[in-house]
Length: 263
Length: 273
Image 1 (cartoon, each protein chain N blue to C red):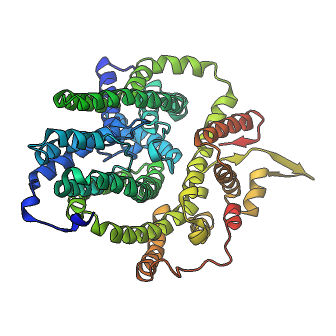
Image 2 (image 1 turned 90 degrees about the vertical axis):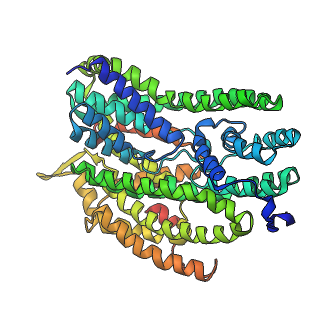
Image 3 (image 1 turned 180 degrees about the horizontal axis):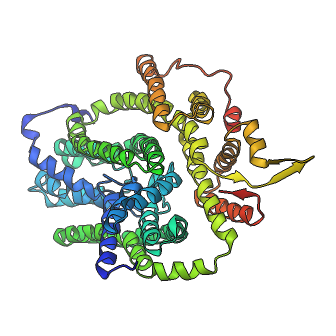
């Protein structure tokens, strides 16, 4: 199945809107599944969008653009992967093979656009010092219009040429590469998990890792169930903390950081 | 800073409409981010109409104030409205005499407030909701994804009121509030840690492909590992990556390293999906 030119344009517009939302309102900014489902619905295969999105959502867990850092553009990865998975007709692996690398390349574009922003901001500052406020006010939103291009351009190119490129690559792709890609898909969520753990107060509450782990690994409890138990644990923590200030929160004597690293 | 607490009726030149307008303009958010002034340009864009009303008869004051807003500013955009709302309240009362106070307040609060916004809105909720949505999605159900979207739409509406919170409270309530918020962050961390513990074995997913056969009994490496402890390999990999991050390695390095290990492992027949 090929793409009509209208579908290519619509997918590019979706990518643009997605990034615009991320840069400004952030309503659906990290819900990458949403965008892959939108693309899936557009191309007539919502379920494929859902499943590709779920895989990419897992890879992205815990990865956030903190303090202005650049992260892989998982939404771009989701949009391209879904498109290729549906149109190339070779399943999800083919989609991920193109989507993930392009999502990684977006990091470079992000850095480039932030450098361009630097020039524009300095120009706006100059205008303000010359009291040309009208020009200044017209210049600042230019950045807002430019930033989403970091997603729209890669998506446009990948979607336009993606199917031919991917199917020619797939034709002489060695087996270890496809298997390796699937293994990488299974391993990558660990990066996000590790990243997340570095933000967490493990010294104080690290023992909850054991609880969560035991519930799923041994009791096969779904994540939603663990989240409910975690919420129950969060309530007394909040009460203690806000009553007694910073003192005596449930002590975790025997639990050192080494223990957690073993976990 | 003393004058901040003195509220005089005739100081107030901004109407509710002006505030609402500034709040909406704050949504340029991080689109103007750059490496030397953060997203200061967003603040200039956001505050310009309000400031030009405050400095109606004072063009020199207006220019000085805008120059001040062009100084470095970076904050999590979800909590940033509280800060800029507060600075607007201060500047409305203090005019040019308060510029230093405005700058001090921004510099002092953007770090701690970002900490709260980053942890809750950018990391914890996306992780918990994303993990739920993805695990449902893997089984073909989109309900989790819709729950995720709905909750963030609700957050979005709540966020609009933060601007007023900041404006009303000025500097006084800030410290009080950051105590309460840090209690909340701590509590939600408990939920987050429990969920991370759960999703490591559930989502990190790769298997040993090695086989051993001895005296006619053949066992796969994975079966042996599973008897030791289910989810042992994901736990070890996560532990290793955590240790490397603590050592200061960059996330992108780790991602590339994992892809190379996966490719090599698959090529040598050690791992399978």
